[in-house]
Amino acid sequence: MNKIFIGIVTIIAVGGVIWIARPTSQSGNTASLAPSSNGTLSAEELNFDFGTISMAAGDVSHAFTIKNTGADPVAIEKIYTSCMCTTALLTLGGKQFGPYGMPGHAYVPKINKSLSPNEEATVEVVFDPTAHGPAGVGTIQRVVTIENNAGEPLELQFSAVVTP
Image (tube, rainbow, N blue to C red; front, side, top):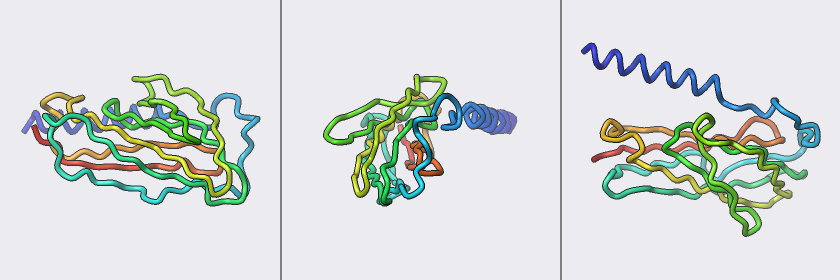
């Protein structure tokens, strides 16, 4: 019982540190990226469930399609993940950028790539179920955050049940 309590407290503490350390688009010099009044970044799907996956089978990936559904260009400023076990790759205009990881475990550079109105891009999310070792079994939920100049960050979420 004591081990469970310590585990829960540890998870809450680590989650709090990650939340506090999360980069925001309001830090740094972003004067050239004025907010877009009529640009909107959206995704065909915001949540994906891998179902049950095995550590032994290795990495799994899923491609999310994002689109500028507004009338103005939208600048993708940063992409980062909620855990070191996850990376994200941006494909825009036939070119791939990344991989992008978790702040504090990987450098999160400014991307500053623009999506024109009605233009689409792909964010491929790669999850490594072995990253947490044997303790990483069970239900997981992760988030990939896309900071942009059109308003609130776009969050792409995925889940899975990890087995040995």
